[in-house]
Amino acid sequence: MKLKLEDWTSIASLGLSVMFVALLLSFYNFLIGPQGEGPERVVDPGSLMLQIIFISAAPCVVLAGFVFGMAKTYGAWIGGTMLLAGAS
Image (cartoon, rainbow, N blue to C red):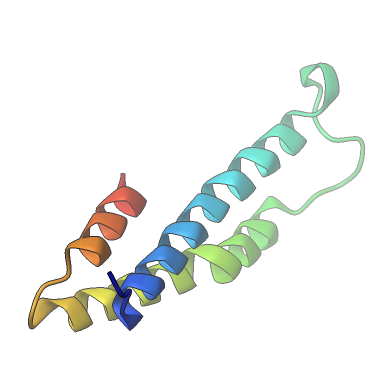
């Protein structure tokens, strides 16, 4: 079985969505801080959230749209499965 462009792109989209969730969880743990008292330094959460979105979430959505457009004409079960896994 030979993987096509949309299959590899859907795998990349899944990886970016996993990275987005991992970054959100690590940022949340950082904001809680040790013993639940918050971070020991001043942090601007809004700008860091924007950075996380531009690093992982936006490319994930763009790649998922690309895969959807490519696989829409003739269907690709691997790409569709990866998109469903990334969405859940």
